[in-house]
Amino acid sequence: MRRSSSAAATPVLDDLRAIFGQRLEAFVTYAPAVSPQPSLALVASLDLADLAACAAKARRWREAGAATPVVLTRREFAQSLDVFPVEFGEIIAHHETLHGDDPFTGLVVAPPDLRRACEAQVRSLLLHVREDYMEAGGAPRAIAALVVDSAPEFRALLQLVARLDGRDGDPRELVAWAADRIGLDPKVVSDILHVANAPDRSGVDTARLFPAYLAATDQLARHIDAWTA
Image (tube, rainbow, N blue to C red):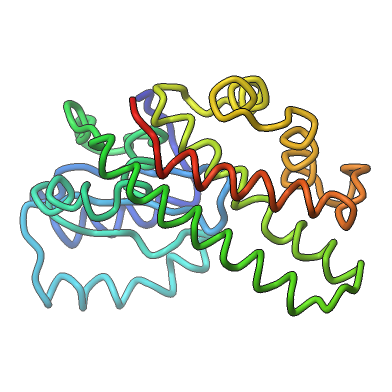
């Protein structure tokens, strides 16, 4: 990954250098569009005194617009890939190294681990969408709101399933990929992505979209359940 500076992350990196010294092996930022700015630090060792020193800096980091960093050893990160395949996979795929060498060279998320995580999240979304629809009691405004609220999660899951197929999850390719690989209606997918990206300017009647949205979510769940490379 290319190196550059991040204003929000600079105080975090400065403080971690002071706290860990040579034990700070790598420091990366990720999810650049997220605020406060998330980061991850890999260290040679970590104890309570280190955590206490970090705790004393937490307010300064928040004021700088940075989130409290994830701090763990390189071995812990590698051993946790099967537990957090989505979260750590995102960091590996979209990070920027600000200190040390790229710490993720050679690390990959195993497809079976990512598939299980995808299935859990898709089925959770499906259950919540059904429950929220019942709680809406047939009110169009409430039905529209549940589509708007959950569409970003549908988009993220579609990108994850695309990654299972070796795609990079490029939003410009998602509609065609979803139609070809999963058999989803391209118009429905396009409408859901418009809602996820710009709910106030999508021009989509989200209440009327709900039946097709529910069907697409169910179809995505069935696809990931039977997924093969």
